[in-house]
Structures are given as C-alpha cells and as structure tokens.
View 1 (spheres, rainbow, N blue to C red):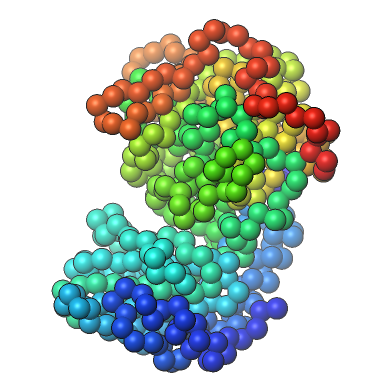
View 2: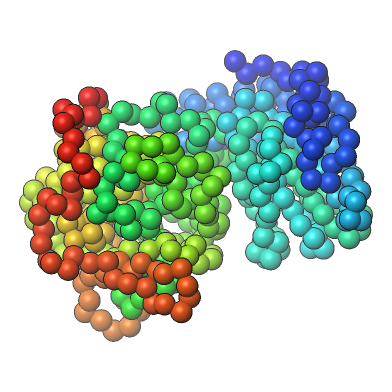
Length: 455
C-alpha cells in the first residue's frame, strides 16, 4: 500500500574551489576561504545512511514520500567556525559544511546562545539567506530543525555583539531527492492553475516537509476553517504523515508552491511563503486524520477552507488538490466508487496521485473538504486503481468536533473564507451561490482535445 505510502569522497581541492567561488562575496565575508575551512561529512558515512534509507524505502517501510535521511555531524565541526569582523563592527562567525551529493541540507541545532543577534543559513547563494526566528527557537531546549537550503553546501552564520560560543549542529537532514527536480514525477498530473474555479481554494492547500524517525518526508495538508470562523490556524493532514508532537515541531509548510500560470514553469520553492512548527492537537488511525495548530498565523491571503460532514452520493464527482512526489501543486478529478468503514473510496478520471499526495483534501462539488488522502494504489499508469480518503464525518466524532465546533452548534458545513490583504476586513465566503452541482466546477479553462494522461 502506498502512502501508508556514486557517492565519491570530496577532495580538498573541490572544497577549496567551492569556498572561493561561493563564499568570497557572502555577507560579512571579505576574503576567500582556505581549503581547511570547510567541514566535509565523510563519504562512507553518507553512503551508509543513504543505502539504509533507500533499502527501507524499497521494502515499503515508509508511509509517506521519503525525501531525506538524517546523518550525524561530528563534534569536530565546531573547530571549523571562523570569526569575521564586519565593517559595521558586528561580530560574526561562520561555518561551512559540505555533504557531497545532497539535493538539499536541513541542519539540526542542539544548542545556541540566547544572546545571538541573528542566525542565518544559506547554500551556494548568499542572496538566498534565510533568517531564523530567535524568539521561537529560544523556547525549545531540546534542539530544533532549521530551514532547508538547496545543494550540498550549508553555510550557517551567527551575529552577536561579542565573542560567543558557536551554535552546535549535531545532525543534518540529507536530501535524497530534490524539491526542484520534477522530471521523475508521473506524467498525467493536471496543473491546478488551469482551472479558474479553484483559483482561491487551491491557495489553502500546502506542501509539507517534516522529520520522523531518522528521515525527512513530504506530504500535503490544508488550512481548515472552524465552525465559528475564529481564524485559528487549524491544519488538516493524514495521521500517518504527522502522528505526534515531536513530528509536528519539525514541520515546514510551503504555501503557493505552484506554477506561475497554466502549464507554465513552477515557482521556486524558496519563493514560497512558509509556516514553521505546529502543535499536534488530535488525530486517529481509524480515519487516518491529524489536526494540527500552526505555531503562527498563515500568510495574508491564504484561505481557510470549509468542510462538510455530509455524505457523498454514489458516483458523485470529487476533486483533490495535492503535491505529488513533493512537486508543485496539482489537481485530480474522479468520483466516489465505494464506502469502506470510515473512508471514501474514489477512482480518478483525470489525473491521479502518488507518494507525497498523502493528507491532501478531498472536495465535493460545493468546494467543501470531505476527507483527506490515506492510502491507495491509484497511479498514472494504473488509472483503474483506487484511493481511500478518511471521512471528515468520521474524524468529527473521533476528535475534530472538540476543536472545530468551538461553540455549541449543529453546523455540519463551513464555507471557505478568503482573507483580504488587510487586517480590518473579515474576508469573504467562497461558496456555491447558485447551489448547482454540475460539471462546470470540474472543467478546464479551455477545451482540451487530448486523449487523457497518456500514462
């Protein structure tokens, strides 16, 4: 069941060349680095970790899209921190770490000083530096995961008013697959931006990266509206994606990771707005749902999606918005074909799903969420395959009601709220005003004469 779904030693010469090429012009950096200034994780250590993760993936040990594997960083990395005096007089230290062959690197920090002025991380391009929130990180005494940087080089820079002990990096999440490489995804997926009817709804669906049991994974989730529009940032996904608080703390939510236009190029993942970290509120394997509460409010303009406890009729049309394989946002269409206990069973007529789609919201023809993706064997090359979605109506009785029905209510649906870009506007409801349920809502903008996905 899906979802339930040659590395060579780095030479000193290459390390020195990288240092000179990449970092001579970085922030607070005035001279090229010597070859000894780069900490390289040993190639045999990388190979051992990668081989183990790939073997587990081939055995079907993972219930979500495997993207990375954890590799320990030796204590000797601390000796590679280099001080730099900036023109402004701010004291800065920088560590350069290389993990050859990594598609991306995500550092885990085990300790840092509360008196740092700033912490930033970046890869080969200092212009892509990401600042880390010290306020939130200072509350976490057990260590915490930083952001993702692309490529096999990681630069960590700290700033302070004095000479402070460098931050400790005890491990990294080593990228096995690139979020930038979409060439290996299956071929029948439909670009969500080719369907104007979903222009606002799609923005409430996001790609997730998180860490679990020594690896990093990708899934899909959605921002959920409660019964009384409190605007608390509830986030719905599958319990087999994130099933506890430790995993929820590692979450990065990537909003608006999609194409710039219908069938156009995708935006860079680094250009996506993000949320980091969440509380695991409730969940259950019975309907495979997890309700999270994001640590921070979503970016302005992200819609809170409505849900429904109503039953789907046999053969009723459905749609699912998802991030297959950890790639940019897609949409698939189909119909309900069955109803195993606590789940909807669907088959697709256009598009499909794959690893990374887990947790994605299932919509009825009124644009309401009625479930989240749990398992299945559908694929572009198996269009007769079926997927199972945990029912919102079952999850409601298993814990959702305690949090989404925030006051006494008999409401069985909520309509999607599209926030405005100003805080003094309550936004608008996105609902099916004419109360029709025809195929208009599930058709592409322009006529398509193709004969299907060609899978």
